[in-house]
Structures are given as C-alpha cells and as structure tokens.
Image 1 (cartoon, rainbow, N blue to C red):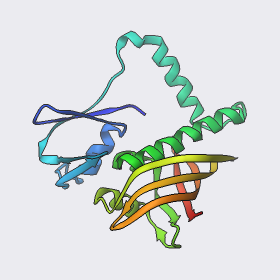
Image 2: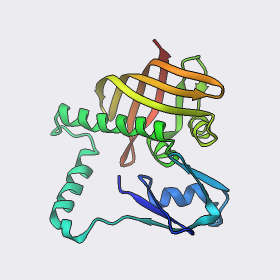
Image 3: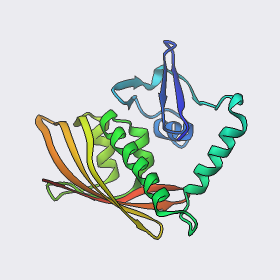
Length: 207
C-alpha cells in the first residue's frame, strides 16, 4: 500500500498506509466539511483542526522502470488466476495477515478500515457478534489497547476468490480494566472485493 503523509500546523509530518481518499472520507462529511474532532494513528491522537495537508507520497523518479515493474506484479497478484501458484497466493495472505496484526497493535484505524469489509460478521471469544464499526470504535476510543499481537502459527486455505486463514495469535494488552495476556485462535475469511482483499467474516476463540 502507498503511504500517505499528514502535515500538521506544527510542521510535524505523520505517515500512514491509508490512502489519501480514505483519510479525507474518514474526517469529512458529504459536503467536504470536517466532522471529526480527532483521529488516531498508532499511538498518536491528532486534532483534525491541526491538519493542514494530506498527500500521497510519490515514489522517486529514480525508481523508474523498477517501480513500474513491481507495481505491475503487485496488481496482477491481487487477482486470483490459474497461472498463479499456491505459494504466491499464500505469501500474499501472509502479508495481509501481518498488516492486520500490525494495525491492531498500532491502532491504525485507516488500515483496519481498509482490510475489514463494511459488512463484516465476526464472533469474539465470548460468543458475541462484533461489527466492523465496533472493531474500529474499540481502537478509536482506546477501549482495547494491544501491546503485543504476535503470530505463532498460520494456516492458509485458498478459496476460489480468496482464502480462509487460521492463526494462533498471542495477545497482550488491555480491554477496559481487564488485562489481556493469552493465546487465541483467529479464523478469517478473506474475499476479493473489487480490486482488494478484505475480511468478510471472522471468529476468535481462546486457547
């Protein structure tokens, strides 16, 4: 994913993997007016009133054909094909799972918003159904704070238009006043939506 840079009135620059369009959609309404008081990127709380510029970080011209070739390969591998080997597909979902774990640990709301489908159906370890917005809100309000999200084992089962992943994750952090420190099994269904893979269903159970 291409990085986007947010420039604040203080001169500070903050980078995120979310797209420029995503950030603007997140903090503005249909009329283009800012409708959020602050946003959270990792451990940084940003008052939207201090944002002076949101811009995509372009690749240097010196990258030339190398960047174009890499971009072509990444675009091609985003779509399932008979020519794509199983190993290549698995590597792609390994990367997606890694990005999702990092987004959970750093509370990257924009990246989570990108990876989770709007109609996500997820069941947590207590048997409760959790929507995408509930996931985002928990990270946005610091109701859930992870200091460690590490993968001990990952299995990938390719499907026609995506994959089912089963991972053993060690979580450490806090949920409200409750301490989190244990191993969990996460099952996720990734599906190609448009030109991007997203999680459409998930289940979590504690070991």
